Structure formats: structure tokens, C-alpha cells
Length: 243
Ligand SMILES: [Zn+2]
Image (cartoon, rainbow, N blue to C red; front, top):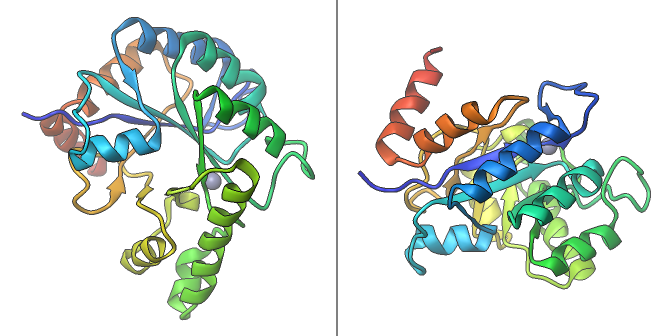
């Protein structure tokens, strides 16, 4: 049985818990404490990519923490905790909406500050966060998708002085054509919202599981399941049929 890399998907860390995807500050802290104290190695997107490609040795207990959407609480609530426990995380931001114009989101200055610490890796959640990408593709809008993905890479590159190579699809919507377009736009791999093992980069997709307002025990079980290639595929199949 080979190692699979568990990839966690968070959205927002706040104590109002308005959305089912929100996690409270206390819970997020307990998750970080568990990860830090149990010998896990948290990876950036590039480190994950290289480990899956076999370019670097696989750490003993790898884990990847991701956040979608770039909400400002990722800076005010999550970042201080990640920093305290030295847990790295990947923030997928929507490059057309930053805190410079919209206060609910992280500003470019805050992103620069976080990137500098080496704790936070800023990557692309597309430029406009179109929720109808599948329909756009359906009516032959390949060029539109390509432009959006390219613009996101360009903006992140210019604002943060880095090469952005990873993408998380809005709503987790994608198809084979879109994967091809992402590759043409310069992305090395794309993060999806389906469960499953991450053993190699065969299909270029990184599978993630959603983290909710759940206990450390809940997280511990998932890290165990998604950390093992066999258990991760069995568990993902069970979930698919409604267990
Ligand atoms: Zn999103």
C-alpha cells in the first residue's frame, strides 16, 4: 500500500459559522495543533507537485492545507494560527477581487506579506470565479476560459512576483477540455473538489476533501484514510454511493 497525500479544503475561518463550509477559530486552531504535534509535513502546491512527480522524496506524513476564495478572515483568523504552528497552506484567490476594492477579501499587500513568510502559498482560483464555466465550454467558449486562466496567472505573477502554476476550479466544475486549457495556460496541475487518493500525477488532478466544523477526531480519521492509497479509494467510492 502506498502513501497518498491528504489535501484538505477550507474556505472561511470565523466564529459566526454562517455557511456549512465555515470553521470556527477554535476548531481551526485544534486542527493545526494536531497536525503540528503529530509529525505531519505540510506542503506548498509546488512541493506537493514535486513529491507526486517523484522529483523529491515523499515525506513520511505529508499533508496539504488549502483555502478557496481568498476571504479576508484567511488573513485575520487563519494566518496567525498557521504561523504559530508552522503549518503551510495554499490560498487559492480570485484575482479580480482583492481587498483593495472589496473589504471581504485579502488585499494584495496582505498576500505579499503572507507569501514572504513562506507559510502561505498564493495560487489561482481563476480571475473572475465564473460559476458557469461548464456552460461556457458547452457553447464553444474555450478562448474565454483560456483568457480568464491566463489573466489570473499574470496578475498573481505581477502583484506577488512569483510564477503561479496551480489552479482550483470554481465550484469544482471542470471537464477534460478545461483540463487541457489549464495546461495550455501554464498550470502544472489543478485542484478539484472530489475525494480520493493522491498517489501520482497521472491525470494532473489533485483530489481534496472538505473540512467542516468538526472535531480533531474527525480530522484524525480523515488524515488516516486519505493518507493511504487503498483506504482513500475505498472511502471515496463509499462516499459516492452515499455512505
Ligand atoms: Zn470558489
